[in-house]
Every structure is written in C-alpha cells, then in structure tokens.
Image (cartoon, rainbow, N blue to C red):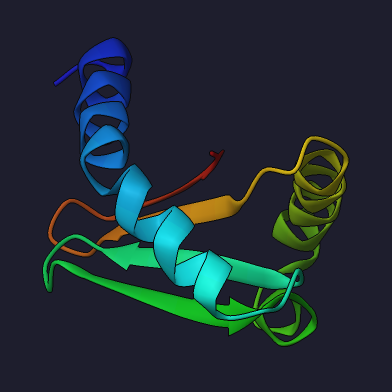
Length: 94
C-alpha cells in the first residue's frame, strides 16, 4: 500500500468510529482526554492527556501538544489509531 492508500484506510476507520468516540468522550465529563482506537481489538480506550503524553517520545510529545491545543480550540477530540499488525500509530482530530 502506498501512503495515500494507507491514509484512506485509516480515515475510513475513523469515519466508522467517529460517533462512538464522540459519545464516549461526552459521557466522561472531562475535556482532557485522548481517545485511542485499537484496530486489532476493535476497541476504543480513553486516556488522560497528561498521562498519555508521558508515554510518548519527545518528538511525539511536541506533536501531541500542538494537536491537543488545536483540538481544544476547535472543540475537537484527538484520536489515535493503533494497528499493531501493520505497525501504524496515527493521530487525528475529530
């Protein structure tokens, strides 16, 4: 698969889980969550932003800090998609 095909695959997955992500986020009554979708398990997990951030390397921390700030400004949610089988770990704002 080329980069465009990979992006399309994960955007399609994201479209399929968007409503559930928004629902789980809304019932948490928190505004500092990161959502993680595990492709292999087909499960959605939520993590507190500050704790999730600590588990990332320095480069990823800086990227997440910017992305989380953008999400907060636009009332969005940062969603990570992890696909262990294909070694993919990508983030999006929904």
